[in-house]
Length: 379
Image (tube, rainbow, N blue to C red; front, side, top):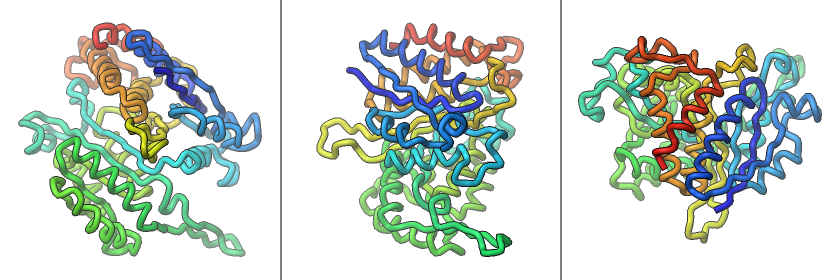
């Protein structure tokens, strides 16, 4: 099979982590007979510098013609004084809305090799679902194209007051809850819906939709938490969670909190998915946008020290969700795990393994090359 992938390297360390991710994909293609064609596009700060806008129309239109999009990171201090509609981050919102991706999947799992990177004690990490071993494995399903980030906003005439509006429609909530339930069906069949229904009318609507949607998934245990309690529970006992479904704002915050428990924000991938290209097609191939959850980290850009594993694992998620290549996706994940087993560490995770004396510091390029080498026996 031949697949077309839109590449948006972006700013800062974005191009550095995207390069090893595409090299890993090419290695997978060579081993499995698939062909990945890349269309490199500009978005974010680099696009502002070259075109004056964070998301050129040409970028969005070209991305729509591809099977999936792989993004590095956008943003940097040189663009922070621009008006809100011209900030690099607007490119992310525009791509999400333009590509129709509405559910952001952010897995957070503690690799056993990085146990000491998690600040929590063993007795906190051990849960009834962990078979007596310290760790956690959860998935946050975040609504992506509604809520506060896309609601009406503005300033008063004198500029001394501002507002942002949280607004959700029934169908926006229903489709992301279905994504959460479907994910839970393939995992441990537990879905926790996080909201602030004691205060927000929009959250009360989430619960009304959940009361209807949950009837279609009787095998899934549905629970609810207020967001402040959920933030506390992630620290108190992360192993209790399987799948969390929540709004755009709450998901943004909680997923970053979860990343701090998983060793490093540089380790975590994400997938933003939408509806199938053809609802009648036999193969479910949703449009997808894939990216590591870290930022552009301009302070380390160009130094060959950024962790590429989040981007590489994002590529694995792309193979799984957009292309249906489960064997190839799992091979990448196993190769990443093998690299950690071998003691390879980028600086953000160095000194945090269980066997520190065996660690070898690897740069961005070197870590990517190691994953490719370890792939040889995985496919």
